[in-house]
Image 1 (tube, helix red, strand yellow):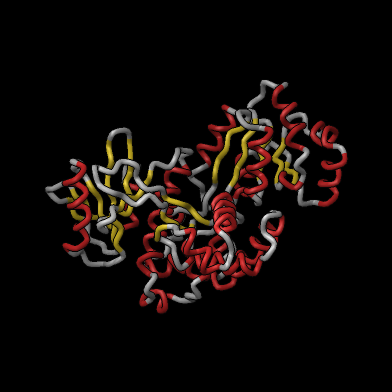
Image 2 (image 1 turned 90 degrees about the horizontal axis):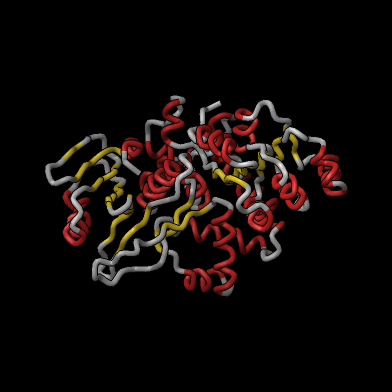
Length: 386
């Protein structure tokens, strides 16, 4: 088992809350993690038809079978349990009593917000991080190989080739999760919508353009985006709110949580294709931005990352905001440092008055420049103070 950095936060939440929910995309290792951390708790899967029928027909009797708590997996399959769990949690002083997990995050989060809000701690478990793979000595040395392979656990611990894993993942996600959500009826159009989004990773989200290209209305696009967000398929990076007296872009930027899915959806099947593909830079940026998100998420911290762009075309890929400090980060897939890499950093630093900045790029040379700019390989981003 590759050790998960989020383990520490999970244990901490179980000491503070009466129940903990571990959410995240399908196949990120949620069940593996909770069974490893809470070995003393019985594991109960609501996927089992007999178990689910017991929970549906007699929820009070089902929960009373576990007076010392349990791991309840796929709990969204028995939604009535949440109301009975609320009663149990309100009447006990015990911490970390029930650990909840589920693969359909849209339904799971909806049930939690309706009945268990304020009673439960939540941890989002994302795919493996660069640091986790590096610690396990499983991080590919070539960045093209890593982008093709992605970060989902089964590709590593079950040695499933991404060419086999990705299409099955997308099919299972659409057929198992999306089919359960009433607002989506045409699954073929929805799959085409996901492929259109893959071609826009690293770009501003333009709902009206997507509606025209997909052939659905704006409300449908917004609903589908919300579902993909809550399913941890995509992430929307918000624009930085401070404009420094400039007119700025206010739409979020779209990123997929895993670059292997992007490659599959764009029909990029090997490193040779990827190395010359026009979307390579956007896929590289996607990988780096989501790694920064993982670093915050694994620590159980809110995301403090933004992007900035004005209507003149000046753009900063990521702004790290810590209190009153803002650190701009440029992401470049090139392996040789060029003066053009610093153009937007120069502009933004002069505008904001900030002094420090980072360039994360595909090359190996590490430079600390006298003007506060630091250039480093993307694998070193764990050294950034996020």
